[in-house]
Image (cartoon, rainbow over all chains, first blue to last red; front, side, top):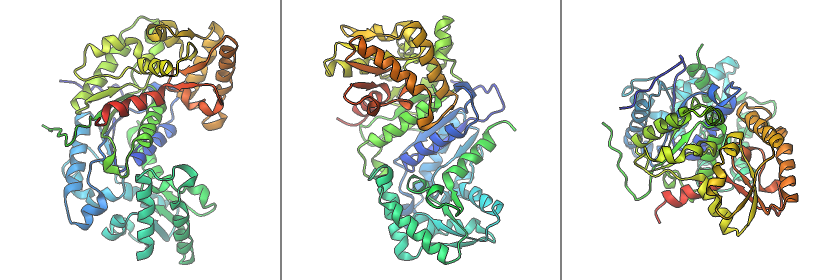
Length: 239
Length: 239
């Protein structure tokens, strides 16, 4: 039996990963780079269960299946067993089952969608557009947490094209600047701006692998990966 | 009690991480990008224990301390408990204690240094230079596995400068192209070439965050991170 000892009041961060794998690696790299640390030993202790076999989120939602939720809970419990004191799930669509997941856990799971709206409210914006997978859009996940924020969602044909861009990242197609999905996403954002959007939410952790704030100078971009990194540091480091 | 079921003959990969955190994130990102997969579910299941509190490798070696080895074994056993069927340790210096570590484990641990020399022999090179931390160089770790390969190691003043470049990465200083350590490393490589080196080993996983093959066109670069990624895919995917 291994005893996990904690020498400080820092929390071990557990990453429920693999949804998808590149987005998980990107989250972990950003977390490392944003941690204030002057040597290895000043960084956070991070444990990760990157199980890409977790069933596809959009498919589970459309088929009204609990398979994704059950697999996520299994990962989360494994991370609790590794000593995680706080859990994060760098996948927006998996948050469709957030309430069902947290009800089975003993340690807190950060809510990425809640954190995104907290950032939107801090910026005092009233209307924002959402870039997300078909599952996230059709489930109404983001509307659930929007409160008084007016949320613009993609039209049916745009949903399909955004979904294709995300799944091309998952397929490892077109790494780096060559990734074709970027143009699709920027077109949808241009449409949102015509409809009065004052900012855009990158509400899928594959989307920050395609576009970022630098692609939209002067237009507020709410990057769900970056926002979850900031929330993780806020919760895991001693206050 | 959680039961880890394996639906295929793939192995769960366990990453003994945190040495240093950015090198671990880099290893995991490269592993994801190099995995032949057309969707999330085709990727490898990867578990990671990124414990940056593992004592500094060079310090442990110089102080003749077992503290690093004990902490690595603890991480490895935690990963075995998570169901890992193969372990990797993307830190060259930690391999100083390789034999002591494997003697305590139930699942195989890939040997990054052995894999590097396997690549050097495949390229049929006789003389190669080594870029590594002071601990790796002073312990003679690479000499132990060199066999008939003639290994050039840094002179005393160069050791100090390479070590500083590596520890600047660990401190998060100068991300991207601005990282000052690059010039130091390229100077040492130029010296190796004057001494007859036919290639260079990036024998520390922070060094590929500073230089890569593109910096040395036509001169074979043995990147220990990439070589460990290839070995991981070879061992973890069904044959």
